[in-house]
Length: 161
Ligand code: PNS
Image (cartoon, rainbow, N blue to C red; front, side, top):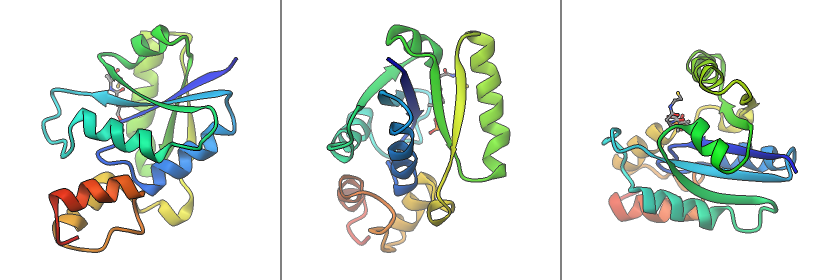
């Protein structure tokens, strides 16, 4: 059974992520969307528990897709859950530089791991979690950019959004 992992910070999950997750889920029997617990990244707006809860709610109804959290190296996590495929989304060429570096690093760490990319649908190509948080912090309407559970969390922090 082919199992892939879609890792990320998901701070918070937005519609571009969801589109890529849906499309990736059609390519694999099992897709684990794995939120990273990165204690060094103090700039996260939402806790690991909040980011995971958003994912769990937003992924309901997607067949073969589950949410999980991981600590430490991604390749070690893949080994633990018996997967060899990492899926990331690319909004455009500017993402490729960083994503290719991560793909090379992960293959250096674990030769059997392959990274594959889903190109974000054009309608979401301008979205990033950072921009969504910035807009929400200024009271802009981000309801068309994120799923309902993300919106609820954003409104919790920025009631004007
Ligand atoms: O959503 P992001 O911030 O692009 O996700 C980055 C993520 C979680 C994929 C990356 O930071 C990661 O894999 N972190 C776990 C630690 C690790 O394995 N680092 C080496 C690979 S660069």
